[in-house]
Image (tube, rainbow, N blue to C red; front, side):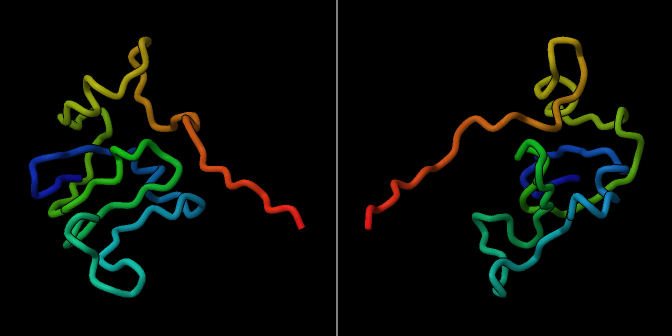
Length: 102
């Protein structure tokens, strides 16, 4: 996946085609055109995976072997110390709201 800004990243094809993942290319948000800061004209949405995989300002999709992607985000940056690719990331935070007493 390639963005207009030069950013690129990739996901395995098996993940992209998994019906339980709901991977999609968005052009609207809440029934309106996707705002620029959210990725207009198109944005890849890859639920349950590191946010860097949801490429904004998408302008090109290429299908190739996952290990042939040349993005530094895939080849150098998002890797475990053992060299494997990081796709899923443990929850780092959450938002809690205080319950109101009745």
